[in-house]
Image 1: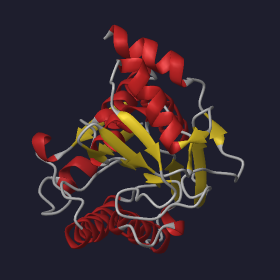
Image 2: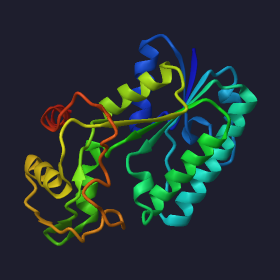
Image 3: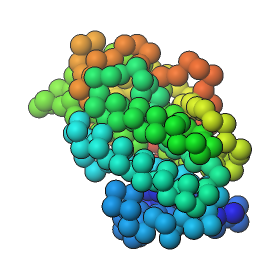
Image 4: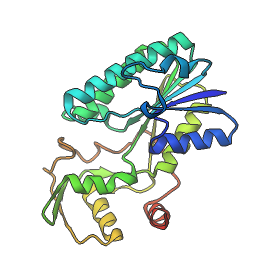
Length: 250
């Protein structure tokens, strides 16, 4: 089966492509650096010719409110139009747990817009909503750092390893479309501030984490359950200690 992965050279895309190829599928890793651009449409029709499944892992180069919204709207419309021309049978997209609970986040508003385009496209689909990746814990710390202090929200986090994400995306692509949502999550839940502090201790970072319920998460206020799933999510197999041990060996 031919499967096209939009964003196929990125973190999740490259892992997913490897898994699908090992299962014997023809995989096209589509991205601007391979000549496929969902914003301009360059190379899109050629890449999708004969494809049965498209996995959309595209991400905006800008997280500013207007550019990110424009990116996901344009990319989503161009991609679904090309899929119709190619008679694609299944559109799989990776989204984020909590997209519809955090309207103050421009990025998450853009993901809501992307999901709407997919639902209304008429193409059979599966949307995989994931909790935050473990690989991004350092980035969360960095965005909230002032000097040697990191002020972080107290809402819960249940991060997932990218290898688990790739496993779930692969499984969704090879299953029948559900025309609905799957939520995926890591196996451990802690407050965001505590999880980041745990990560910093593991890497020997001496910065001080301060728990602050009013601190912002990429510009938005968090409630306890904003970033976690209680909708019977599929749980990854890799906990933080296993992920860190594997990452630190690389």
